[in-house]
Each structure stands twice: as structure tokens, then as C-alpha cells.
Image 1 (cartoon, rainbow, N blue to C red):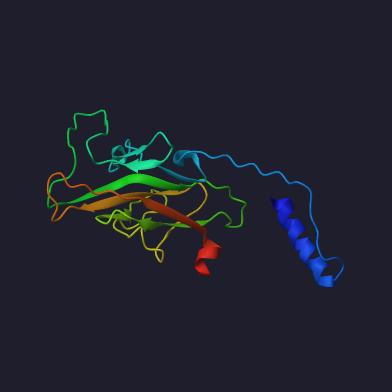
Image 2: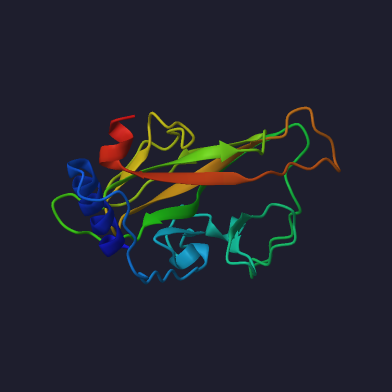
Length: 193
């Protein structure tokens, strides 16, 4: 991929001089492995329940390798928990449910730094907030959906995310569902937006 980019830059300089009008390179190799959320460059995984205050048992990696948040009683926590959801007309907060981690390479000189936030949330009664990380504590309650207040992560660093469920006005049998999209941008690119 880098070789192809370098060729394009060189070609534009030559075209500008009038030396020739078109150019085509030979084949260039591209190899991309697709992996699950837990092991990708931007990892999404349940929080480690061995750490006090974490609630990773409300998250799971499904058969497609994608993170899911589960509050419907179908989860198997390996405990005596028998809850099947939230109460009607209630509000719940679940701290440190999953972790977003920057597993990208670090080329040094501050490269590899990411600004991360939840850019899309279609579950209208669920709001996401940043938890904390031992090396970089954040104020619990910071809005994780605010592009103007992203979590900045160096390679190897991650932050926990919690969520609040607002079931006010709902009755037994109602459901809340939706999807989220996590966005990560190089800090130099994001700060220039």
C-alpha cells in the first residue's frame, strides 16, 4: 500500500512537468485480516470483571465477533443472578461495561494517538459515558458520545465505557434496542476538523 502511494505522488509530479499523460504500475500486494472486536486495531471487549467496579458481565462477544450489550436475561454470568431486565419506569447506570482500546502500532514521535468516541447510537433510551483507566482517569459521567470531548488514547491504552438506561414511561414487556458505532481518528486529523 505504501509503495502504491509513493508511485501516485511521483506520477503527479511528472504529469505536472508534461513528460507523459498517463501511467500504470504493476500489481501491488494488499493483505488485510478481518478479526473480531476483541483483537482488532481498535478493540472493543467486555471489561475485566476481576477489577472492582467493572461490569463486563453485561457485555459479550457474539458468534460474529462483535461486541453486544445484554440486559435481557439471556446472558449467563455464571452467578446466581436471575434478573431479566430493568424495572418499568426506572433509570439504571452500569459503570465500566466494556473497554475500547487502541491496539494500533506506535511509530514513535506521538504517532498512533487516537481520539475515540461513540459517533452513532440508535438506542434512544441508552446513553454512554466514559469510565476510567488506571493510567488516565476520566471523570465518570463524561459523555462518550460527544465528538468535542473524545477519549484520547495512545497505542496500548484503553478506556472503559458505561451506560445509562432510561426506562421512564415504559411498562413490562417493552424493549429497548439499537446499535452503536465507535469512531476513532488520528489526533492530528481530528483536531483540524
